[in-house]
Image 1: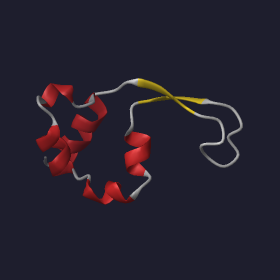
Image 2: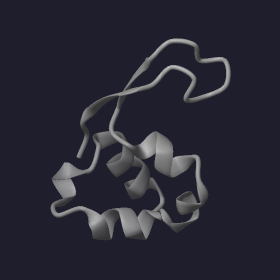
Image 3: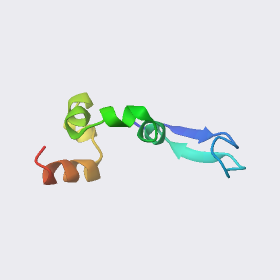
Length: 65
């Protein structure tokens, strides 16, 4: 699931203006929680497979998930 959000200016080094973003994965993937995100946990967490991004589904198919 995605949602629109804006990161405040100075949230990251060298970012002096607000930064438009979508969802919260940028936060998850850049912190320790990222190691908990696996192909299996992604599939298991989705209420329905069709809710997973098509590109992710393609990758999951390539790796046999």
